[in-house]
Length: 71
Image (cartoon, rainbow, N blue to C red; front, side, top):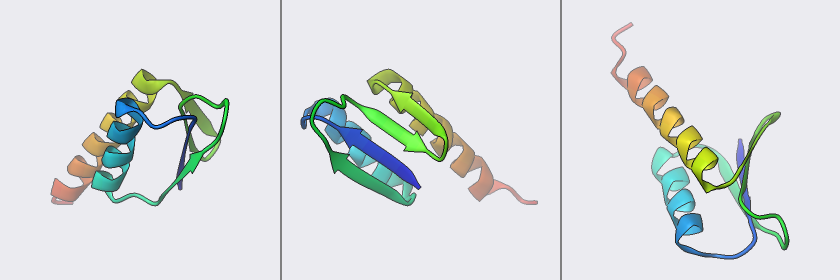
């Protein structure tokens, strides 16, 4: 499960939440003071918009490859 934690709603937060919903992956969204932007996936923790966005784009690519795999 992906756990996305943020401090205040802004365009970057909305973009990340929209991407999580679009990917249809199990996720939880938590607003917490003083945390900034953080995405946790198991033991992996990503901090900051760019690193989270890059990770979600990589996940999206993996999902597309898996979906179209004729294995």
